[in-house]
Length: 400
Image: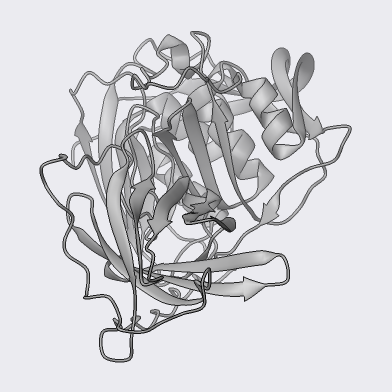
């Protein structure tokens, strides 16, 4: 699933998202009761085995946590079995006295709880955004263990030599008043955008930033649309096939005609920092990346999964920054990574999201420092020659 979501939306991310970033549980509303603790004894501090608990995040989400002892301490693997049961490895897991913690960087989540004296339960809270949600784990036994559902096979990819178009496409005006695109998704065979402008669509289709689109009409970034479409060929498209379908949609429904040109523009150039990159190879499979934003306790977290660096730079220039972003790292492959930062007024087209008020006095660094500290990459402003889309003709979309 490809998802590009405005930071104004607290997005549930991927099928392994667990709780929404803005899910709230009232203190007077207890979490669903887990299965009774196993009547077993364990060596003090031995937390290895299967644990399970139910998270109340708008709906009940049964969660299984498999903990194993390693040479370096502990490892953990998590399953949200009501969201498909895809396994996801914890980035870290620790037990300090009776305090157990684990974090899952892929979805920006973390857990902290207290191990009971008999070693059969952990009472704590899951945090994925500003609002912790109570979550109690108990040891699973043969009688109480929940079944982990079999994973559905990944969708069959579209043939690489396919030349797809959208077979059916519906375009409707969006009058919500939102100032930026609210969603761009490919879920199975269903493509959809919410609150996208023509500039957003051109930017995605041709991998350019809004300042690389010149000579357009004044409604280019003002009029906004919701689009739903289905490809005319079987299989899940890759990103380039998806871009091709959007290009054809722009030509057929907006009557877009343009030519390419080169101009010297202010841009941001992404390179590897002096201490080397800190990227983590992806845990996921598939041809499309997942991208989204969620508020965190100290700032805004940009979440990327199964993403190439070209996906990252495209996301930055489409939603966050005010100029093109050029990748000159030379790094290939797909990665899972989070970047937590404090946005400023120059980002998000002058409308940075308002972050929730928290008791923490800490705040995340700005975007440029965060990219360097957390990813080992460097983003520098400089003038460089870039491709521009010079519009020759365009019309408001034809009726459905």
